[in-house]
Length: 491
Image (cartoon, rainbow, N blue to C red; front, side):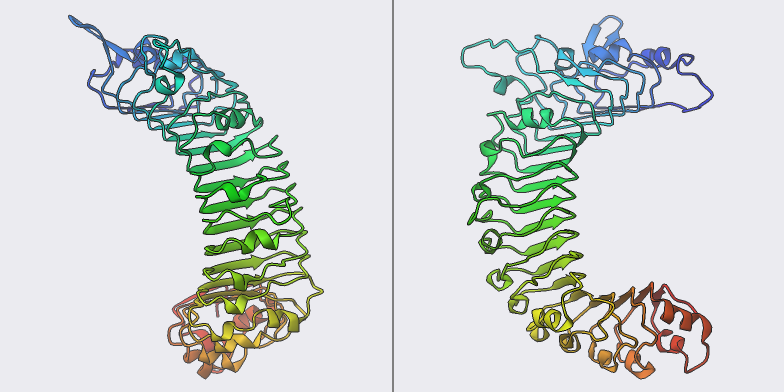
């Protein structure tokens, strides 16, 4: 492991890092190497060639290397030759900010028929000037040998992050299972990688902050195998695949902070991925509706989350048709006027967050949408978002004696009701932005909550004022002083 003293008083051109590292040739049996903070403009010769010179034995390859980690070598422009290392499994290039190209020499030239034969994980990140990642120069040695057999034959994980200027990438990753591309101006590298006919094993695809991405690239080569798809912060993304049903193995779909996305499915009657367990749609401000046919067709769906969709007007889904739902979170959709149906028929529900919808929704409609949950014995966590002109809680709440965690936000209630005493399983109580709240339940009622260990009061100004001013055995503080952990208020 090499690290350097990052003394800001030492100029970049006036340090001896190059000569020192040149003289630190490792033993040829070295298995792991980490170079961090190297300030030279070029790596030493033994590093570039991955060979060391021993008297009487000449040049010997570092062919026992398994793990290579280069970090914050900010002045180096050339990338060493790694492709010839027969045992290399893990390679990380991080913070080589001056490097502009990963060229043919990266692969080791044409000295071998197989390049990176054992590499399983490759991470390239924080290289803001990198514009090119070239294909390997492959000359087949037989009619039956292809790039598939010669380049990255074992690579399973590829992560490219914070390489904003990169505009090209290789296209031969025959065993790739996980691909993560994060923070890039051009969508061309993503398109190039995904367009390969070799890419048939991909299971996990994460796309984050690709500035020019307007639609998903061709995904048909691995639709049968993809298990996890995450798309976040792609501001220009307008549409997803036109055939979600063909993703037969997809278990998790997360779409977040894609501000131009208007629809999850733009074909009427289209069905969803049949194996989907987890669906998250968040902070997609232009999304106006959800197709009931698509969501209701996913009979095995267990987790459904929809939040922060500012223009979502309608939620026509009958959740009662999704019997496996155990976690349901639908909140902070300020234009939503049509409430979801069937919540009370979800017999496996353990977590529920709901509310902060259009102010045109009246309390009775909100309460009716929750009808049936009062009979639930499985519900453990409940987050309710109300409106400031609602001075009641839904009646169902007083019957949820199995609740472990309860969070209440935005209601206009002035005092928590005495029936809180029946919530005998409650362990955590959170009160958020209850602007009119002045009183907790009586001391006797609060002491009935024998399992309550945590109380959080946030932006409840009238209640907080009473706690700060009142003292004595009959004060508001005396009602809660027995709770072990209290956040937000103090006597």
